[in-house]
Length: 94
Image (cartoon, rainbow, N blue to C red; front, side):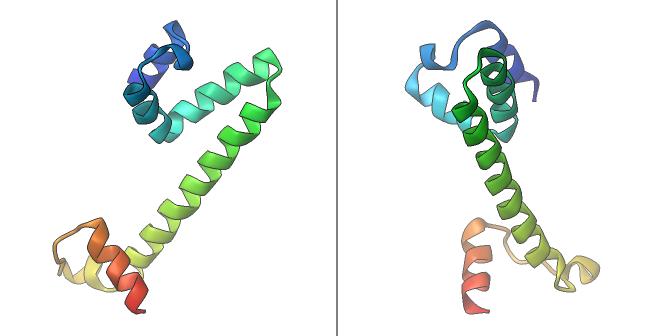
């Protein structure tokens, strides 16, 4: 959480290398910092985009968590290999 804050506090996101930009933009907390900077500068389109990304990320994470916790695997501690591929396969089959 602190790394995006420190990086974005001292540099502009557009000045960073492309790979670092993509890594930082994948972190949802980065978008809250971008939104606060953009709101201060009057760039409301960036604020709306950041809020949209945070909302979409939250919905996806909540959906995956609900699917995992809706079964009794949590109580019985019977887990298979935990990977995104297995989760998506189970969601597709149901």
